[in-house]
Image (cartoon, rainbow, N blue to C red; front, side, top):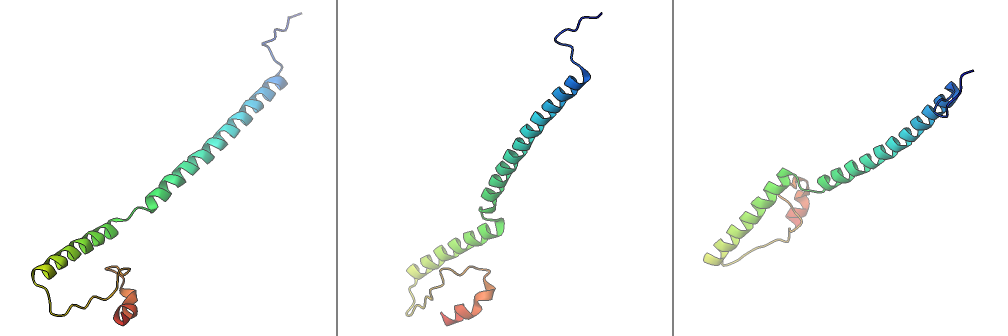
Length: 103
Protein backbone atom coordinates (compact mmCIF):
# COMPACT_ATOMS: atom_id res chain seq x y z
CA UNK A 1 0.00 0.00 0.00
CA UNK A 2 1.07 3.51 -0.76
CA UNK A 3 1.26 5.91 2.16
CA UNK A 4 -0.70 9.11 1.90
CA UNK A 5 1.23 12.25 2.77
CA UNK A 6 -0.49 15.28 4.24
CA UNK A 7 0.40 17.33 1.19
CA UNK A 8 -1.43 14.89 -1.04
CA UNK A 9 -5.11 15.68 -1.26
CA UNK A 10 -7.99 13.94 -2.89
CA UNK A 11 -9.41 15.47 -6.06
CA UNK A 12 -12.44 16.65 -4.08
CA UNK A 13 -10.22 18.40 -1.51
CA UNK A 14 -8.15 19.97 -4.28
CA UNK A 15 -11.30 21.22 -5.98
CA UNK A 16 -12.61 22.65 -2.70
CA UNK A 17 -9.28 24.43 -2.16
CA UNK A 18 -9.43 25.86 -5.70
CA UNK A 19 -13.00 27.03 -5.15
CA UNK A 20 -12.01 28.66 -1.87
CA UNK A 21 -9.12 30.44 -3.57
CA UNK A 22 -11.32 31.57 -6.46
CA UNK A 23 -13.91 32.87 -4.01
CA UNK A 24 -11.27 34.84 -2.07
CA UNK A 25 -9.84 36.29 -5.28
CA UNK A 26 -13.33 37.20 -6.51
CA UNK A 27 -14.10 39.06 -3.28
CA UNK A 28 -10.73 40.82 -3.38
CA UNK A 29 -11.14 41.97 -6.98
CA UNK A 30 -14.76 42.91 -6.39
CA UNK A 31 -13.62 45.22 -3.57
CA UNK A 32 -10.72 46.47 -5.68
CA UNK A 33 -13.08 47.24 -8.55
CA UNK A 34 -15.40 49.17 -6.24
CA UNK A 35 -12.48 51.08 -4.76
CA UNK A 36 -11.11 51.85 -8.22
CA UNK A 37 -14.50 53.09 -9.43
CA UNK A 38 -14.84 55.34 -6.37
CA UNK A 39 -11.40 56.85 -6.96
CA UNK A 40 -12.11 57.46 -10.66
CA UNK A 41 -15.49 59.02 -9.87
CA UNK A 42 -13.86 61.27 -7.28
CA UNK A 43 -11.23 62.42 -9.79
CA UNK A 44 -13.80 63.12 -12.50
CA UNK A 45 -16.02 65.05 -10.09
CA UNK A 46 -13.04 67.20 -9.26
CA UNK A 47 -12.35 67.81 -12.92
CA UNK A 48 -15.99 68.53 -13.66
CA UNK A 49 -15.97 71.40 -11.17
CA UNK A 50 -12.97 73.06 -12.82
CA UNK A 51 -13.77 75.70 -15.45
CA UNK A 52 -13.50 74.81 -19.11
CA UNK A 53 -11.37 76.76 -21.59
CA UNK A 54 -14.27 78.89 -22.88
CA UNK A 55 -15.20 79.99 -19.37
CA UNK A 56 -11.57 80.77 -18.58
CA UNK A 57 -11.10 82.87 -21.73
CA UNK A 58 -14.35 84.82 -21.26
CA UNK A 59 -13.57 85.49 -17.60
CA UNK A 60 -10.10 86.71 -18.55
CA UNK A 61 -11.61 88.91 -21.24
CA UNK A 62 -14.13 90.36 -18.76
CA UNK A 63 -11.40 91.17 -16.24
CA UNK A 64 -9.27 92.82 -18.91
CA UNK A 65 -12.23 94.80 -20.26
CA UNK A 66 -13.18 95.95 -16.75
CA UNK A 67 -9.65 97.18 -16.03
CA UNK A 68 -9.40 99.06 -19.33
CA UNK A 69 -12.80 100.68 -18.71
CA UNK A 70 -11.78 101.79 -15.20
CA UNK A 71 -8.54 103.30 -16.50
CA UNK A 72 -10.38 105.14 -19.30
CA UNK A 73 -12.97 106.46 -16.82
CA UNK A 74 -10.21 107.67 -14.49
CA UNK A 75 -8.34 109.41 -17.30
CA UNK A 76 -11.38 111.03 -18.93
CA UNK A 77 -14.37 110.99 -16.55
CA UNK A 78 -17.78 111.27 -18.26
CA UNK A 79 -20.40 113.91 -17.42
CA UNK A 80 -22.99 111.15 -16.82
CA UNK A 81 -22.26 107.47 -16.14
CA UNK A 82 -24.95 104.80 -16.37
CA UNK A 83 -23.98 101.49 -14.76
CA UNK A 84 -26.69 98.79 -14.69
CA UNK A 85 -26.27 96.05 -12.07
CA UNK A 86 -25.47 93.04 -14.23
CA UNK A 87 -22.88 91.31 -12.06
CA UNK A 88 -24.36 87.85 -12.57
CA UNK A 89 -24.59 88.25 -16.34
CA UNK A 90 -21.88 86.60 -18.40
CA UNK A 91 -20.66 87.34 -21.90
CA UNK A 92 -22.56 84.50 -23.58
CA UNK A 93 -25.85 84.79 -21.64
CA UNK A 94 -27.91 85.73 -24.69
CA UNK A 95 -31.01 84.09 -23.24
CA UNK A 96 -31.28 86.77 -20.52
CA UNK A 97 -31.93 89.71 -22.86
CA UNK A 98 -35.21 90.74 -21.21
CA UNK A 99 -33.64 90.94 -17.74
CA UNK A 100 -30.72 92.95 -19.14
CA UNK A 101 -32.99 95.47 -20.88
CA UNK A 102 -35.14 95.86 -17.74
CA UNK A 103 -32.06 96.60 -15.65
